[in-house]
Image (cartoon, rainbow, N blue to C red):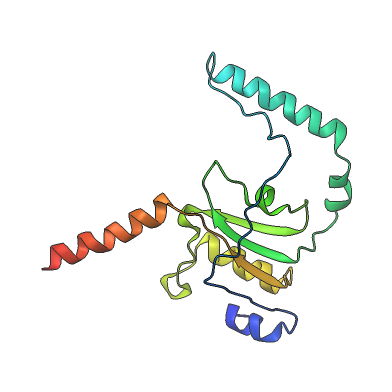
Amino acid sequence: MTLAAGIRSNMTLRLKASSEVVGLVQETNETPPKLITKSNGCIDSFTEMKHRFLSFKKQIYLYQALSQAQDPKFLVISYADSRVCPSYILGYQPGEAFVVRNVANLVPPFENGPCETNAALEFSVNTLEVEYVLVTGHSCCGGIRALMSMEDEEKSRNQ
């Protein structure tokens, strides 16, 4: 089944798009997570990650239920910027969103051939039957800036 046929056959699929800023920014009193800082090299960073993982294994039991199946309501196509995690800023709990991250949150045309983003889109719509597709971005995106400057470079070459 093609992606287009899957979308047509999935009657629960509701796509909502907006070109307007939705105004989700607000003050929060939450304490930000401790960041791994550069100190004595990568050994300290890996030790810190190991401790975080062991703590996670001891404290998080939700993943046992999620290991059986997933039923997310959202597909989130987002940017790969390490400073911003879509699940964190949107408040998704594990299992609520199927997240695809790439440079500049791009979805290449399917006609250009298969890619990971297209595969994730097809899988989430046809198999997981997500209800919503949300494409997120952020201001001053370096990936979009690079893409837009490539267009300018090509125009100047052809003139």
